[in-house]
Image 1 (cartoon, helix red, strand yellow):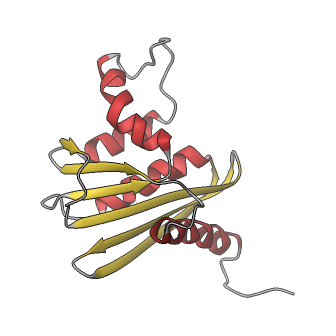
Image 2 (cartoon, one colour):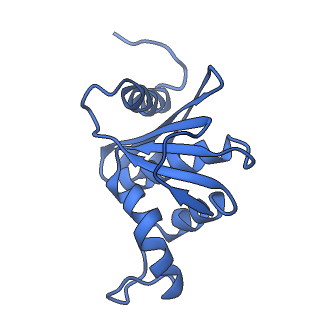
Length: 159
């Protein structure tokens, strides 16, 4: 894995997670910008946490893009950005235990994300959430749309 903080990559992935209750019903959203094209992805889970949805968004975004291209991942989650850049290497050395020797929370998803970046050129960028950043707002809207669709699978509007 090659990690840098440049933004010259050809593919940009904007990710966000949302949760109604924590834990509770959660959703993730991804906006992928590549060569003038936009791709939107989203999904939801019945009982989850916001951090899990943030991780899931990053995983799904990376899985949707060829491993042959450099990507820039934009997240409003310091948990995801700090985790992948700073914490995962130490957790791996410590057998997926924290510095306090406790099991890493969300280890299953951290391991999937760690595999998703293996051998790829990925840069990680933090953006302030809910601050009017257009692509971050779209990723947030996708996460919330997934929650709404999960709550109303028939697609019918009540009332």
